[in-house]
Image 1 (tube, helix red, strand yellow):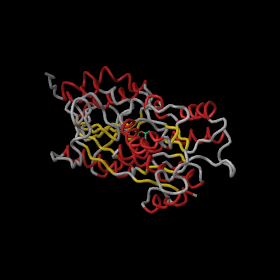
Image 2 (cartoon, rainbow, N blue to C red):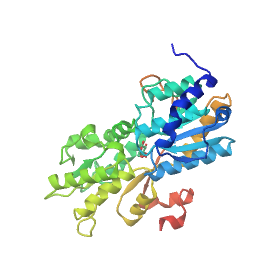
Image 3 (cartoon, rainbow, N blue to C red):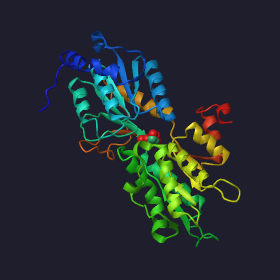
Length: 372
Ligand code: GAL
């Protein structure tokens, strides 16, 4: 049985060990909370986000910090630069400072078992943000989008756009598709993949969709840490080896950052002209660069995940926990992290293509001027 130390006992020990690593790991901090023993009793929420290289996490972090502060909390927002050891060190420091709650979008969902054991010992509550943290019972709640649905939305977009299964002149036509998946250390990856495959599989099985590279398994299509450059290289390679004579008609991409890399490879290979149009390229997150690309007619679609709403869910959960109330959840069955089924609140994502980018302006997600 785990011995539950009081915060008073736990903090100074951990703080001494970790005081040095705080400066060493080059954190990007917001909120200005320096370590101070008295802060152990303060009202700070530690927010650990994976990277600033993707706009969405910047918005997620800012939205959460703003909303928690409005609700009367202090915040300490940290970005791990996509390095697991940075994120672990940042969390260790947050524990050492005696924060009340950690909200974490994990870089590697399996790498936080030890550090969350220490958070638990210190009586700190944990919300898993967007990505489910695996292999530890010490995750209180999960706030995310319906990840399987995100994948389905992307797959269905391709099916509809190619008019697969429609009784018209295209009914017999075969289309070439290539498949991309997310990072193998992100639990969302398999949900996205399963959702997309649910929709695409009948057409892959019937042969109406053809993957010329034959890379149809999840582990052949994953892109470590969702890196756009890696996606670009893979797409370059797929085009060189498989598309000498034929064109690719659709590319399944689960994230805008990958889609940008994929589009660069396609354009380098001569796609994107009147005579040689780009294939359908999906995405997700409605990041500004991709929305502009959609408006220009390059990327075809993205999945809109309103980070303001996700932040609101996390703040609702955190505030409820810290005031002795029960957070609102809408899923208590599907998100088993290997140690417990984590109660979740899942938001519904929407599809955005050239026909409805104004939705992003109408809902105030972007200003009109940003999209032109
Ligand atoms: C996933 C998230 C996606 C995308 C990706 C890369 O965890 O669900 O929407 O943001 O990370 O950042």
